[in-house]
Image (cartoon, rainbow, N blue to C red; front, side, top):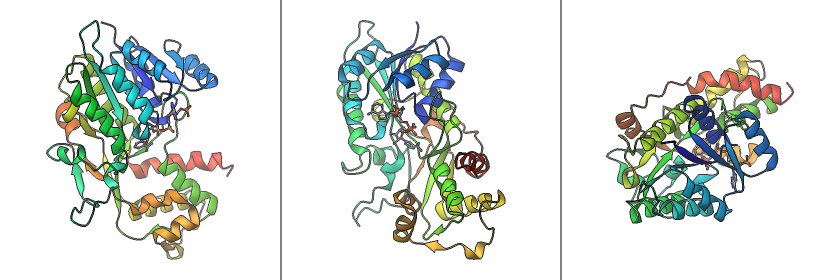
Length: 340
Ligand SMILES: NC(=O)c1ccc[n+]([C@@H]2O[C@H](COP(=O)([O-])OP(=O)(O)OC[C@H]3O[C@@H](n4cnc5c(N)ncnc54)[C@H](OP(=O)(O)O)[C@@H]3O)[C@@H](O)[C@H]2O)c1
């Protein structure tokens, strides 16, 4: 049987890296990508002539439903963590019975922003380290107002209502780093923005507190997706789906002060700031956001969740370069982009 995959987000960092892996490892798969603009569609087609491209966006309900109905596996990373219309269309079509009698597999990308949710004082979730094994009930029962929870809920409810026709896996990455290999966006977010800000300002700062997130290398994340896709192609494999189909995807824990200190040291080594530690200011969140903008808020938040499920069931073993090693390459790229 030819495996048919419908992808949303292939022009982005996460989806692009996965598309590159799929094309390399499974060139026989029939892949259709939803792309928003003609110019990006032309690039995807030029890089991957085998890939079919359809124009549309998350709100193109008719197109998303039609392509979902045509697919065995749907992969969604097109702002998926917060995408209500596209996720709803996928779930609606994927729940329909197919002539083949086989269920549709849906791999949805969420995000561990979910774990930053601070419940009331009686539930000290903030700072807690979650996990996706015995800790699974926590992950699938966050309150509606937690980040990304409204979209997770669309997927989980559709899976619960349609167990015979729909198999879902929600993959929840933390901060993603490393160079993307996709056709268009190859740039991660947090490390490039962190070092670019230091290079541009010629200085950095350290955050107060002891907040921490987990991180994952984008190549390791793609490897996890590939393992899930392979399991789906085998009719489910050793993966768990639906209410037990929730996968955290972490490879390394880092405290933010430690992360910023490492970035400062690497940027100093590269010669873009003075290496004098004593001159580095320590800022609280208000000061940092005021000075460098809203993204600095992440250095004061905690999102910790250990991925046990993918390791145990899928044999997933992250192998990517460490966060700190990756910084060296990112500094060179960001400095070049800034004309330094
Ligand atoms: N990057 C991370 O560190 C990280 C970590 C955890 C979770 N996530 C989640 O993963 C998702 C993707 O992240 P990413 O890093 O791949 O982002 P990205 O590089 O910005 O890619 C976003 C993708 O979504 C597409 N897109 C945006 N709005 C769309 C719309 N209305 N309809 C259809 N497509 C649309 C973009 O298409 P265009 O090329 O046309 O813009 C692009 O393909 C996000 O939901 C994010 O919250 C990311």
